[in-house]
Length: 303
Image (cartoon, rainbow, N blue to C red):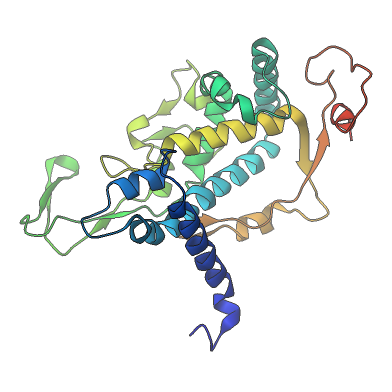
């Protein structure tokens, strides 16, 4: 197949090669850093080497750790640029948090652990992330679940006190996309982007956290949830702290954006065309720009 229609498989072949190369590279290193592959290698089944355990899981880790976060992040930016009030509220909250806690503006990599607790406590930021995950979950159709082999099936609790028997060999799935947009779980306006539904004391908002399942639910839920949330907080906070963003209307249209949203197991986005302008120190609520020189001098100037 790959030789007959190479154009359809070149991308997958490159991904496979990347996965194999990275797996070999990681397995050749001392397993001191307790990352995902450390635990895989340490718990390899009898008779399997660390490499044999790592290689099959590398591509899964690459896709699960990048495609999903990228999709949610892109949708969050699109939603914010479409809702000026939410955008401004978020940027004010981020500015206040950065200024009060002395968080670096551009180079925050070395400070990530120090400020993760601060970012996780920002109500607007987490409301925006939750609302993006609610409206556009990274896996919109959800995962299948089935009774274990030789279990005799399962009894599922149904509505109106009617139980449902699920026999072995059958699977069910609960679609996060549908559950998240059901007004029985989220109201009012379940199809609208309303970040404050997650933190407002207004009793008119119905927000069922039990029905919020972007990372699935139960013991088989997404193991990467804490990492994904940290990535989303870190990226959005750094982005909106340092830049003013707007749609590039010479290339962007809402109709085209909506048409290019495709469920390919993970939610696939089209290109989001935006213009970014570096914010001045005054915009970020800091004192006037000092006179500086050197390779980073332009980072404090609006561009």
